[in-house]
Image 1 (cartoon, rainbow over the protein chains, first blue to last red):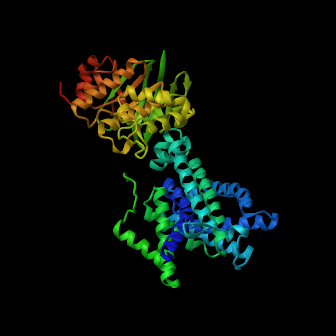
Image 2: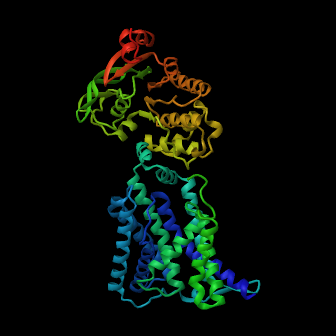
Image 3: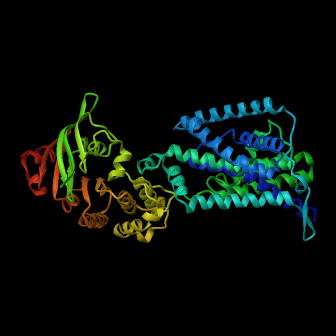
Length: 287
Length: 239
């Protein structure tokens, strides 16, 4: 029973990693931009929520509703005024700029909030659990996993059922030809990053309620997100969820064997998948 | 009524003149073929008409407006559609979605407004059976047809075709010619650059010959092809 419990905890943890990864996957899929500051943007959003919680006395769930449009604007401005300028045939400039942004964000948060670890006050929900067939499942992990599924369903609907989604995919295929059809790639990119920041805000909510955070934990979240995206196969959001679940399960199983093995087990699972299926579990048919 | 006119249009890259004092006009509903040896400046001429290149001298009028300095996206909106020599479909979108994207953004309309038009264009270009297939998996004839269909989806008054018949087998070429004839019969004005002469002459009413950026002749296809000048310069026959 303890093993089943461990695996289910891992699956639910995978939902959080999928939330970390969905925004990264969205941005990479549309503009081939590897955002090295993605993890730090999650931490930034967590501090933004914390600020709203402590200044206005809101619950984190309400604070997210205010934080989300702010992050949307941050994403739009970041893409429009910074990242669009460095996108091009050379992949190095965007890597350097987002790496620099990562350093700036970490130090700015350190300056503003100190290195003390923080936590979003979740109230009763943090410890609440439901009994399912002899297993005790935390409400918060269940909520996280459900949110991940909602986000993925939502993004897939957006991608395949809307005019904006088709413009996203057309631009992803060939930005120059899309431009000749009257699409403005710079605006499409800005909208994509803005939407990715909405997902980032949601990821930040669950990150901040689940565990302590401090200004320096961003890069590790970035790595989990990356691994989830790559295990799943680039371009597949459901694959990203599976990738997150694999890392989550590997981590909790590793931790159950020996607490020191938690992080290592996650990375090992990633390497094993990469050895067996270098293009990920669900690669796109055409590439 | 003339839909397009070029007056003394010239374009040089450095000291190389690729379009040299070109003047001609195209009537509404007409099909004009353009031939000429490689490097004669045919594609450059298209780029000048679509606005991808700006002419150094001369004036281009489209649909009653001077468009000489108008950027390409606006020319697309005002009704100049183009197919590319090398098909460039959006590989991960379905055939239908390729048309939807071109139609909505090329005309500035909503998807709802253009759906019917897109379905009709798929019928006209004989692509209806592959409407929901990803464009990346299409074979050459279908890719060429999609290129044509996507240009049509922007609802052009003037359709520019760039070597659309190249690389097809005879049977495929015949099928494509039928499709283009069908579009022409519906009143679409066409300018068509092509090396496959029998394809071209079976559709167009007028033929323009270009060599070293200059117009060598323009008029009835048979007369043009039989003129001494064209045979000497274009076909390289010593008459």
